[in-house]
Length: 273
Length: 259
Image (tube, rainbow over all chains, first blue to last red; front, side, top):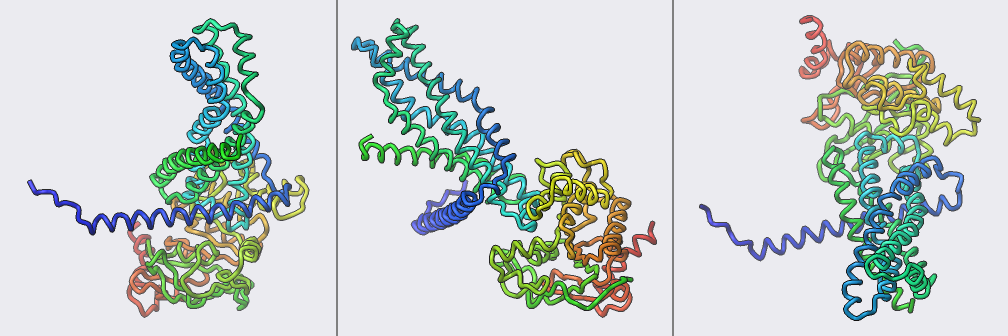
């Protein structure tokens, strides 16, 4: 058998070079897309009559109401799991009531917005990329352009608006479901009276905590919609290209959502929230 | 052949070089389309016909050269100017490129809703009229996925005509259609010119339609990356200096004889 040659230093440097070029192009595309999107959003703010309301409502239904059952389910289970893990530890110290604190803070500040974002990435972000990618293959994007209509305004703005509206709403529902999950553990496993758990939750959580979660969810919504659409526009003109664009939309969204989460969490703590 | 041909140039292409990335597909292309003419861009598969069309309609930026449409340069035009210019001509795409989420009527109504101040009732009248023109009356409320390929192309044509453009571009109108449907589409193209005086630019490799509809053709060639012949199809078939052009155009006769 032929001995496998060791990668040389040259290969290594070449690899880094290639990867850097790809990252550079990707960043450039992202900045260009963000700029274009910002201009279109500003235009829309000045001419709200130009918003395609019917499409916007359609996407609100798709990303919002249709996602509600799964959001409730996942967030409830997250609350349950979190409550259970906390309960096991807290019981050792006899401080069961702190389960309410832990579940409350984790769900409202982190897991509520994050879980909703993950579900939205899987449902909406991938759908956006696939839809726009397929439209590109079918020359529908070209057709829009030659009709003098901006693909950005027609395809991205309705999706973006729908996401910006529905994600915070879904997060509220997710938060409530998560807290109920924690309460289920508190009431069944720890034998805490429901009203005690409830009072403790209300006592420790402040409107600020709730609002920080909502701010996060708005940022996530923007990222997921923008990345989904951008990957759709970047899709190559074949079926496999659309598949790759969809995968890439999901991976990139998850990455940026987590990065944004980290940045926001640090920012909030620096600002003293 | 044509009734009201004038020599006024509606499309003018000068020194156009196009390609993707670093690959040049076509080099130094020069031609013009006269008002009222049916002009065909002909060539073998993969010679850059569709690429040329997409540069003509301003979708892609050429390496060098100018494309003047209605006397305005679409290559150097800014975004707004380009979008205004694009509204003045219609384009029909290979697969129709209808918006899948809208019915046929909504597809045709889209440019009307965006660019005119007509009432919904007026728009509805125009939409029905355009769909009747392409023999799709009664299919107003169908979704693109529910109709055949040929119907999609005709619906795409109805949409391209919504704003009554004086210039229409066709990308492979007969590709993927059976000979009868394809012949119907050719008749429709001729009728459009007769009734509406539309100037029509067609990209195709279907010889049957070339001989039926075209006033003038240019032939693109893969090897030279340029135009190898220009003239009326009959003249080129009989008298072209280039044997490959004669052979290409005579192919349709061979097919008929064999049949």
